[in-house]
Length: 127
Image 1: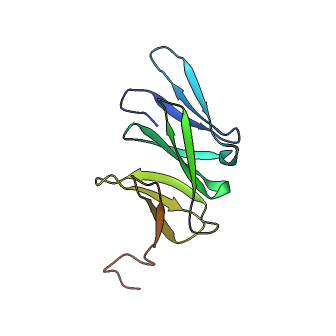
Image 2: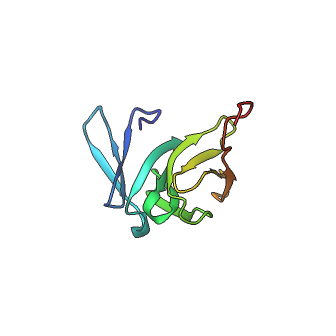
């Protein structure tokens, strides 16, 4: 994922790390994550922080690149397998939950999440 400053963020799956490549210099800086976050996925740079999912551990987290501090949070839906993040125009971060027919919204100020059931069919379409 390319951040607004041009840095390229990546997840180091199975090593509990996030990394940033500076394309101008070729330098790489890696940020260790808590051990529970050994398989990070889907980095999203949003409002100065890097958000990520941890599919195998049913977690999501946020890294502050300025301090290097990372926090992880449980997804409230059991066996949800979070994977995929997108920021909505209102600042809410939405996660896809592969293990359930749900999506979850991470509340930006508290990092709490809630899940919403996905529709079984598109609105207005016949069953």
